[in-house]
Length: 120
Image 1: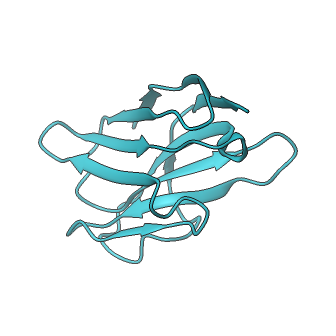
Image 2: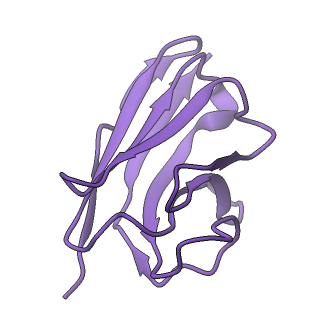
Image 3: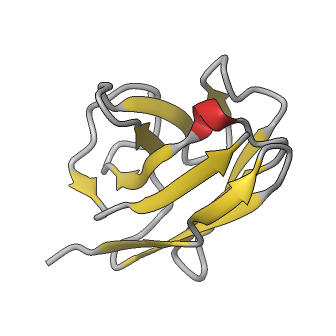
């Protein structure tokens, strides 16, 4: 059974930073991504990374968030800086078997999420 387990969420003030981690029981060499869902809103893509390290970010987080992965350890990360109250939500790690075209909602495996709360 494939497992993705997120950690690193918490409560911070606006302008602060958090680093999310996701450990996977499968290879992270293919498409990996972070999604988030705010209360009362649909889940949205935050960032993705493909098999050769090319990254894509949502416009709302460009320049503030950085996605990375360590394939040897099967970890996915999301460094979040200059956090804003609008970044509040549950953050999910996701994995797919395809190596490219990683931006989008077509992911097979999902973690349970880690909560991020940013106060003004």
